[in-house]
Image (cartoon, rainbow, N blue to C red; front, top):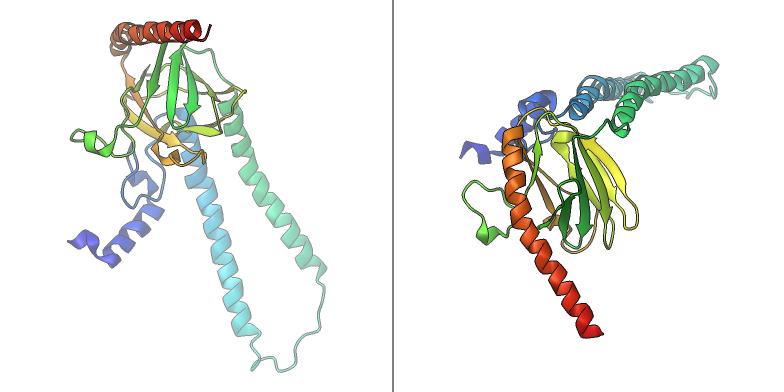
Length: 280
């Protein structure tokens, strides 16, 4: 196949480097080098910073340094300069190579701080979710709705057609579109990290501590993420699946979830009581 040709794949990679907006995916794709398509304002801001600030600065510095290396090799080669220069200092050059990096860092810092501030300032939430990292799965709670459930990865042999490997879970999160979703993140055992690239969200899950983040999805769809902290032997098997749906579909899901997971919750309570009675 043409796709297996190394030169073809190299060409595709180069194309994706210079045209990252071509990658319109909610999940990772083969040979993907840039971000997934943004689904929130925070991620749109991150992509803008990357595409229009960081990439031009990186490219300009790379080209400039390459020019200096090539110029130095040609201009100061031994055949042209049999007697080496004894110059040790140049005040003007030292001022320039100190001020220019400072200016570049300021150019990068101003929009970066603005994005960081917008991510840390959580607006009034329409939906609140608590995510708890376990070895090796996620537990979720909708405190306002009294819904608690666990989310395990679906093994490869149980996948249905169209379900992505290592990203599909048995119990998915549901959130309404264009609503502020506040996520409280913690862990029960070791460090984990709750990350959803399309929403520009990534927070550490620390035992004994609650970190908070938020997102507001601007379109419907199914979005995937994973644990982004090395948490043990099954670190790669802690996917996150979020379904962004309309308000009506979200309310229908809530009705079903309250019945589905309430039974599970009652059975867990009975199990805990029985264990306590046996111990006493």
